[in-house]
Length: 67
Image (cartoon, rainbow, N blue to C red):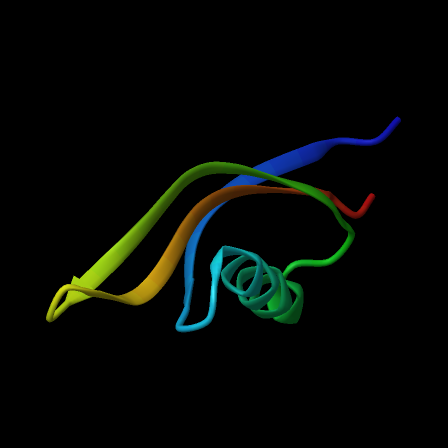
């Protein structure tokens, strides 16, 4: 029987939402083992001088706990 855990993280990128998701998962994988999925719960941007400065995502990352 497997047991999964979910943790919420926020990640950002200067180039887009997809890149922000990839950055977040790449970083999460450094400390979490057995990542099986992610659910994007929020997307935001920061604006500077009328232009998008940064793309941000909040996601819930699911991973399987070791036995």
